[in-house]
Amino acid sequence: MNTLTEKINHLNQLVLDGKVMDAFELYYHPEVAMQENEQAVTVGKEENRKRELDFFSNVTEFRKASVHRVAVGENTTMVEWEYDYTHKVYGVRNYKQVSVQEWKDGLIIFEKFYYPN
Image (cartoon, rainbow, N blue to C red; front, top):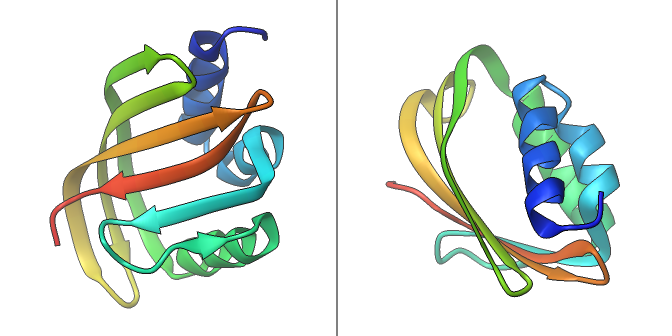
């Protein structure tokens, strides 16, 4: 897979198949920084791996994930997701989220998630 379109579509399919951490290992840069809305940025693949694993370990029921739109630009991709799940900390969550990815060396170097609080 060479183009960003191919990469983001494959990443999305891995997520839809329940292979979120496989997507993370395959497509995220060792120096990746990730940010939820305007919260503090989490820097580094190891720290973001821990953050992701912590989040998913608290999901008690996963009902739905779907992709509504994908946009690809120069070293940037954006995906509109819809999620429906129950989380131990956040309770029942059903919302749309936009994820914006900046790519470097064929990997995601920065990702920010925009969603309602």
